[in-house]
Every structure is written in structure tokens, then in C-alpha cells.
Image (cartoon, rainbow, N blue to C red; front, side, top):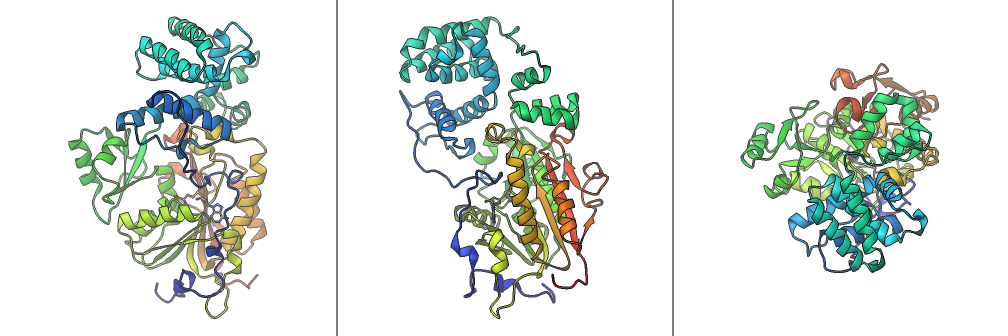
Length: 499
Ligand SMILES: C[S@@+](CC[C@H](N)C(=O)[O-])C[C@H]1O[C@@H](n2cnc3c(N)ncnc32)[C@H](O)[C@@H]1O
């Protein structure tokens, strides 16, 4: 830590004000990127337990209770293969929901509103299997008809059979939407909400928009960040090759990451549990490169769970110095602790803390904790429009009005995070959003409010193609082939009067 103030006063040992122990759990539905604590209750599965019946129960929970796809763990009674299949069904049907509903409504001869809801859910799954899974058509139809019976939609069994057979016969000439509005048709065909499609068309133009929609609908591949304190990219690549696991080098961070299409071999080989790797997209890892943490420094990651960026920062610092990883959710702080332990990192300290109360913090002598950290990372809750390929339900859980609420929270968080940065220290603001309101507009508003901070370029820290003309890091899925990400470097002036 050199001659910097010692951050031990910032952790759990301190006896004075500790807002991070109060575990204030915010309503995270409005704060994008901040998932709710896990709901531990089991799903009610109708009929015999298998991948389809579990997926159907999960899809019902997602629709009726707005449960998060990622938070629904397949039933332990299913074998590993069936668990993978169930997860794919849930993500796939959720992703394609609008298009699947269009196909149902275009094929069903009655009024769409008269279709039994359970029959609709069975049909969605059946069509997904027919069109996007490797299930043979006759098996998909047969399974859907029995599923209709299991869930008490016996009356709809004939209908389910007829709709699926019809679509199977027309699979090369599926009924296309014809609303009279080409953009609306595109939104239906690519299964996205119309407001997002219109917004992105204005921003990116039709070709990039279509590429982005296709990206969001494809099964995502995964970045595997190698823990270089324990092993090397070459060794992990060798182990994956022995397992015949498909892999390719990372385009943007080849020294630290490998891309894999399937996580199963990685899990089976124990690469995660042995602390040799973590799953992290390049887009997220690049934010830490923009932060550029150095050995011996004190870093605070104020929105740190589940810990992907905090642990990478510690690795880049060769585990020398301190990374204080904070998050408002106690359950999620445990995830950071577990990740740091698995990776063998000693420099990561974790605490439950509400960033918006951090200004209350004082050290043992009663001095504010402000202005001590060398670098602060604010990876803010956001709309998550850059990671919609990874989070199948996100597109349906966002509304245009969310942005204004999120921007307000981001401003408040930026102000709170800035207070922790020492003179001449660095604040990095990042999101996984593609929306300018959440990115450059927040930075511009911040610089207006904080004339003691200046914008610094990310050039030289990450590949040039990812740095825009203002020096922001920006990745676009349709252009760079990774998640969407944004980061800005904000340097506090060396000598400033206390605000
Ligand atoms: C985008 S995620 C952070 C991801 C993390 N940086 C990583 O790379 O693994 C945003 C996080 O902010 C947390 N959060 C939301 N509101 C907060 C607050 N008021 N104080 C601290 N953390 C908060 C959420 O719980 C969520 O884990």
C-alpha cells in the first residue's frame, strides 16, 4: 500500500458506523443488473418429472411471478443431461416467446384469447423443440400432446397435435408477420419488444440492428478467464483439448481468456472448483483492464457481486494490495467471498454495504473514509441491454420508463463512489448497457457536477478498436462479437479543495 492510508479501517473490524452491516436490501427490480436474492422454494411440477415438465413449471413461474430465468435451478431429481436440456428449454422458449406466440396465433384457427393458457405454454415449448432443438419432429409432437394431458389441458390435446403438425409441414415456409409496419414485423420475427427494436434502429441502422437481434437470439458462448496466479492459458487450453471441448482463443484478451461453447466439460474437469478459471465474458474483463489496477494499491469495487471484476483486479495486482469488494445484498457478498477463496486470493476483502449510505462511514478516529482509495470501480446496475443474449428474460422485463429511474440511481451512485477516490486517484464507471443515456450521458452529467474530475482515455489499455473517439471503452455485440460493455476513466485532480 506504500504511503497510502491503510484501509484496514474500512473493513469488518471497525467498531464505529458500519452501514454495510445493516443489510439494506433495495428493491432491485428497478435497479437493472441487480438480481433479487434467490427464492429457495421448489417448483410445482405436474405429471412425471422430466426436462419438459420441469421447464413448463419454470416457464409458468417466469410468466406469472416474473421469476428470473437464471435463478431457477433445475430439480436435483433430473440427471445432468436432463438438467441441461431443461435449462435450454427455459432459456429458448423465453427468448423466442413473441415469435412462438405469433406462430401459434397464425396457425390456431380460433381467437387467440380463447386459447387455454396451459395449452399455449405447451405449444410454445413444442414449437421451440420442433424449430430450435434437436428433438425429432414426431417425438416433439408426441411429447407436447402428453404434456398437455399432464398439465390438465386434455381438451387441447387435439389442438396441440394439429398446430405442431401444421408447423412441421410448413417449417420452410413459416407464417411471417404482416402488421403493415416493417419494424414491428422485424420485432416479432426476432422476438424482441418493439420499443427496443425502434430505439436500436434509430441508433445503429437496420443492418446493425438485425445483427444485434440475431446475436441476442443465438445461444451464447462463454469466456473462461484463466487464473494466471495458478496456471496459464496454454495449460488450461491443453486440458480442454484433452477433453475434446470446443474452444478458441479470445480475440480481445488472448493472454487471459479462452472462449468455450459449452461449460459442461469445464465443470466436469473441475476447472472452476479448482480455482483455475472463472466464467467471465471479455466485455466484463475489459472493464478491469480499463481500471488498470497496480500492485500494492487500494481498490474499492462498490458494486462487486458476484465478484468477477473484483477477483480479476486482485489477479492483475498479483494479489498484492487490497481490493475491498462491496455489495448491498448479503447473499451475493457470500458469492464474492466464495469466488475469492476458490481462486486463492488473499487481497480481496468483502463486506455488505449500501453504496448510497457510504458517505456516513467514518474511520476509528471519526474521520470520513472519503478520498482514500487509489482506484474505485462503479460497475453500476443498468438496463443490461448489452447482455440480453445471456439473460433470456431481460428483454421482457425492461420498459422504456426504466431508463429514467436507472439514470437517477446511476447519478447518485457516481456521486457516492467519487467521494471515495483520493486526489489524483481514478474512478471507473462501467455498465453492460448499450444505451447512451446510461453511458456517456451519465459521465457528462457527472463531469458537470464534479469539476474536480476529468475524463481520461482508455487508449493503450485495451485494443484500439474498443476505444471510441472520446476515449470511452465500448463493445458492441454485433460488431465485436462479445457482450456489450462501456467504461469511462474519471481522474480526480491532484490538488482540490474539499467539496
Ligand atoms: C452489474 S452488477 C455488478 C457485477 C460485478 N461488478 C461483477 O463483475 O461481478 C451490480 C451490482 O450492484 C449491486 N448493487 C445494487 N445497488 C447497490 C447499492 N446501493 N450499493 C451496493 N451495491 C449495490 C447489485 O447487488 C449487483 O450485484
